Length: 115
Image (cartoon, rainbow, N blue to C red):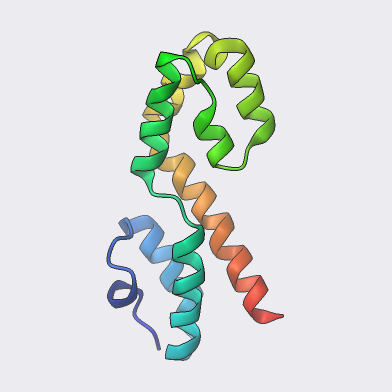
């Protein structure tokens, strides 16, 4: 049984518990393989925050592009972050945005490893 705290100590508590539930029954070598792939794909909440803050100086929606939400990124870009209201909301919710993206990536890695 792999302990995700030893493999990825940089995770936030909610993300750590989710990832731990995914790797709890994996042998150590599979868990290490999962960690290597997942670490390359995940986005740090600080990166999401910084790119969201860049939206205040003219590049609204950059964080949405980084999170793979191309449609929302274009909408934010052409509307100035929905007149900055959407950007302000995303500054408040940056951790949730990063967590949701990382959950999707973890699920994709697990699916890829099973096939």
